[in-house]
Length: 169
Image 1: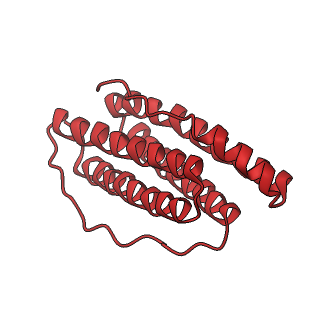
Image 2 (image 1 turned 135 degrees about the vertical axis):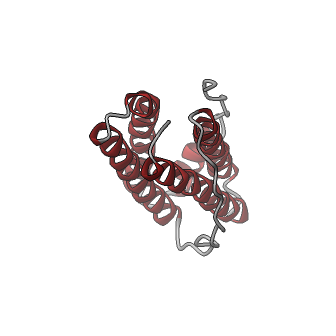
């Protein structure tokens, strides 16, 4: 069984993943209010992914004999100035999540918890993809400099994204 310190860290990550879901729903709402349905779809899929990430941790905690301890989720930011601000915040948030997962991996290595180390490898790879995705969208928005036609093309591109369930634990 994992240490109490590890179970606490995993529960904290579970909270962060659920908070991420809520944060991305707020971004989806912003884009819906701006009639940018493709961007809204992108963040709807992001929210679904974060919930799946949370459940993967939830199931893992139970599998290793830990107890899930849920926390209240505070209201995320709901007012945004621009699509660029939203994507910038999403990128910063993904970097925060990446650091958090790296910290848990470091703890697992320190504690010689090889099972949790192996479990976290999926998250390490997933976070690299998440950061890359947000960075690409942010760079496209910067190139467009608010050009309406270009933004609508990017919106159409983001509308194609679909949720793909993650591998079962």
